[in-house]
Length: 525
Image 1: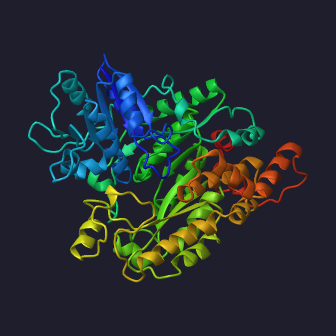
Image 2 (image 1 turned 180 degrees about the horizontal axis):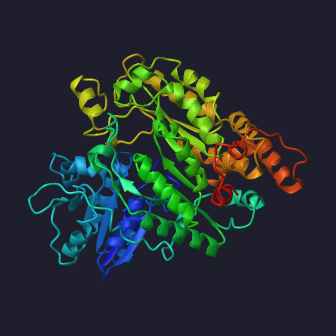
Image 3 (image 1 turned 90 degrees about the vertical axis):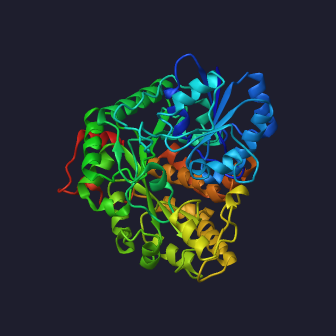
């Protein structure tokens, strides 16, 4: 049987990293079946195109995974596939919470023949076998013999054959940037960001988050050996292709168990498995100097930090009081001394926000080392404590906002500003952080660093700009390139002619209290 695993785009913005679930389920598929992967962010398809594809390729089963922001597109794609007689199984956080919606049991249309609830590691092989026999059930739940929900152990994690998987569709950076990248050094024929997980679960239970509900509050980890071997495989592939592969550790909190994380990072260093990587880590865990040393030495380049707000009252309201805004700057400086930078995420429209929150936030951001600030709106996702609280208070304005995805649009009424004012705050944050002037300032802030670091921050900001200001075609990229021509010319000039002098600043290598390792030098090269 031919199986298509399809990850939809939301029709508005595109991710530049594939989703892990497709590769994981491909590895868990019983032998004797052919599995095809399509990511809608890399290969956009409308309903007619996907229907034609499944007919022409004689697909026997389609699996679709989607988060809430993608679910409207996922339903349309599923409808088109089912219309040509091919069964569809859907899974992911949204479908897990609203299975009746996907199955048409809530009074709406049916979109799926079957749904996989929760983590599908154990149920996917059963789904495939049932589909092959023509005996697909409606609901597949991860339960034990007693009917109690069970979470898969990650100790015997499947080997994802990254050395053999066709990753051509995920080489997503536009070709226009490759001449600039090649100036950084050899080995820039391709560039991909690959998802890897080292653990699942989060105990924090932030009010707006779906993670604890989906993965649970108990943390499960892969073995260090399993993770290290996966990194070595990716590193070997990049070397063979004369390209670059970066890893995004998709763990919801990569350092939630600091002792275990340090152990993993030490093993990565010992095995010389360093690749450039990104991970999500809470600010409170980055107080640990040794952890920051190991992050840098093991190849860590970016850390995603959900700061959410600079207002302690807001943080307490959403059960994220462990964030301490007063230490944000210190944490970011601690990382920057090791040439590790941060993706800092903020949420506007919280209950204590008032007009001007964007500028107040940016006043703080401007005092920090350059990074990638991103801004969103407080969004009540289905089944979260936030959704239930706002529903009980009668504050929801779009009860099923996911059925018509509108990016950066409120679905409830804030307490201390209007919906329109909240939208304006997000626009202000993005506009003032990703203008040509802001990009130039970010590059100049790293004037004491090697050229590669400044190209890194510039290209990263260009890509992140597309989250709010979609750059879906060549003309859009050319327009942005024109707006940033001064910075581009400055970087190219230095790449071609070099620099006679460079300012210096204190770096981690200059500190006597930080142990230096051979691996750290390799990771920073």
